[in-house]
Image (cartoon, rainbow, N blue to C red; front, top):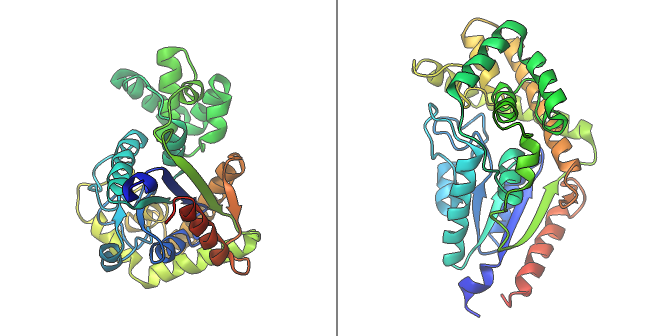
Length: 319
């Protein structure tokens, strides 16, 4: 069997909450195995969002192949559907080079769409979307989230009450088709069906340790120029808080400070709180997915033991 044909059976996934060291583990693994890294991060796709997304330095990305980073302008709206198309194309290209794609990141909406399939949903209705936006302005997105809970409890449980874009889309599908978006999403084919898939999640045993690490990392980002990065985006004049790029954790809180809605100290406090909330939501996704293999990144020899699993996978291919 040829090298490309052998590796072409494998797709690896490394996920977990923000701040657990996924990128570091991926880089270390890529130094030992024929790996190319495919980012699964809804913020890293945007050019100009570097410090706040903990994006690997460009020099490192040139040394070790990374994909789906810096592929959009901040004014664009990247989607799960586009991610599935982009990731599938990169997986095919990586296998053609005789390498193994390692998908790394914590955007679980993207991962689920890739692994479980992307439903064929109806086209967006401009009129209905306008109506929902107007209703949200009157009664608030929390009320629309409650309405979604009555129409599609499974989707409402998965979607955060402060996520207007996904609340709007789920309601739109229900009202347009008479079917639940959660039901439609379960009936679509997986783009990864042809491959042998291994999926690991870095899950710290101690939540307090993760919370402390997230606060330290946010403060380090601030010291490294995060506010200046957001200010550069703010001063462009073609962005506002409704763009998905600016809604990214940390960016929207510092944007509010620059807009005069919060002091810098309050914005930092809110940014840290939002980061912890993101980690909590990611852990909820992980607990709901029984197919993920949990790894405590703080356990002794955690990386070394995981690396042995990768080596064992390669041995089955005769590498």
